[in-house]
Length: 239
Image (spheres, one colour):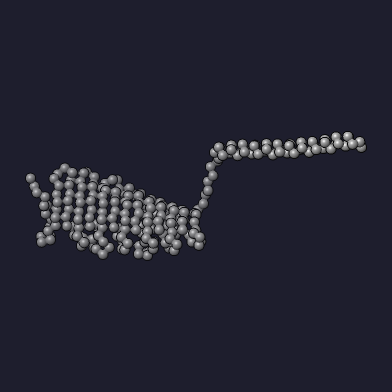
C-alpha cells in the first residue's frame, strides 16, 4: 500500500475514534440532564395518593432493648390488663413503670404500687413518679366533667384540683388535707349556677371552721364555727 494512502487511512481511523468519544460524552450529558429534570419535577409534585401505615401498636426500645415508648389501641403496659391500659401513647421508665400517658381513655392509675380502676374513663393525660404511682393529670369525662389535679406522693388523695362539673353547674378549686389528715377538702373556692359563690376553710379533723358565701343578690355571710355551742355564727356586721 502506498505511503500516502496508509497515512490517509490512519487519519480517518483517528477521526472516527474521536467522533465516537464525543458522541458518547454527548449521550451521557443528555441522559444526566434528562434525569435531573425528571427528579426536580418529582420533588415539586405531591404524591398522587397519601401513604397510610396501619398497625395495632408500635413499641420504641432503648439501646438495651427495653420498651420506652408505647403506642397502641389498647396500649401494652406491664401490670395492666388491656381494659386497664387505655388507648394512646405512653412513656415508660427503664424498669417498665408508666411515667406519662396521653390517651382516651387514659391508663388505670397505680397507687402505692397497686393498679386500681378509675371511677370513669376520660380523655386526657396522666403523670407518675419514678415508681409509676400516679401524681396527677388532666381529664375530660363523658358526662361533661373536667379536672386538672396534682396528687400527694403517698395515699389516695389528690393534693389540689381545678374542677368543672357536668353541664357547667359548678366550678372551683379544691385543696385537700395532707395524707395524714382526716380532712379532704381543707380549702375550697366554688361558684355555681344562679350566681352563688362560696369559700370554705376546714380544720385537719374535717370540721368546717369558716364559710364565706354569697348568693349573688343578698348580703354576704361569714359563718364561723363556735366549738363551745357547736354552731355557726355570722360575724359580718349588719347595717
